[in-house]
Amino acid sequence: MHITQKSAKFAGNFSATGPKQSGAHSNAASARRSNLLKFRYMYVIVEIQGQQFKAEEGKFLYVHYLGEKAQAGDTVEFDRVLLADKDGEVLVGAPTVEGAKVVCEVAESLVKGDKVIVFKKKRRKGYRRKNGHRQCFSKIVIKQVVA
Image 1: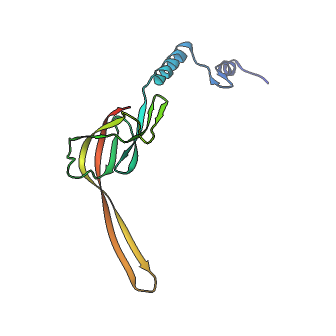
Image 2: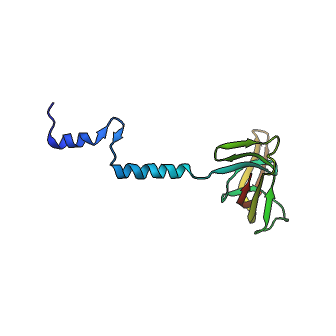
Image 3: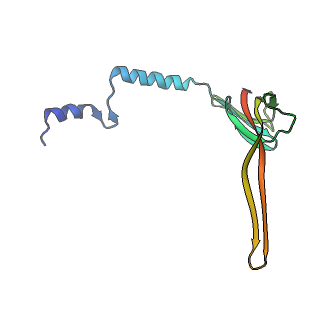
């Protein structure tokens, strides 16, 4: 096998695991990786009106309609936290985590969901029933997670 000068130079930049990186590039990549590992990650599983949601700060949730008592801009707290994960340390409640709560702000009080058509039919019997349904939701934004 004959290797030319150009292909030998090209072959020197690769190893079995991929391209070789220069010193400055590999140091920057390792610095980015270490910064990602320092990132604080926390989420909780909270029960809101009989349903369980994964809640993180800054995220939006569509929950069942909270009623007329919760208007847009109001602050609502939910204390039925079933599980909390803080930087990989998991706290499981029995049945709830003590002292944990989720502080939310109501972004929109009433949001209507998609229309669902319920159609019942029995063939050859002349039986047809059509019914429609739209679920009402409230849009909330998670402001703070305390665990």
